Image 1 (cartoon, rainbow, N blue to C red):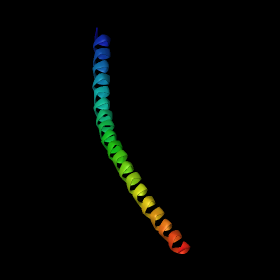
Image 2: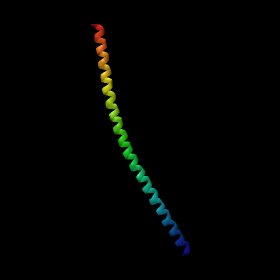
Image 3: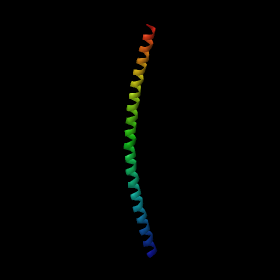
Image 4: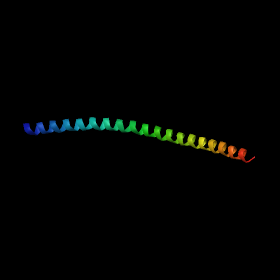
Length: 70
């Protein structure tokens, strides 16, 4: 009977450890999701700015070409 009690105690300890690991991993996963969301937003903003700059550069190049023609 003592062996069974020891096994039950070991099992409870293992379950407690698994709970702690789960909580830690869940917290880390939640933080990573927030970070990923932020990075996706930053990427979208950089793409938008890149396109705007590309349009400005193309406009400048077009004006330079037009000034060379006249």
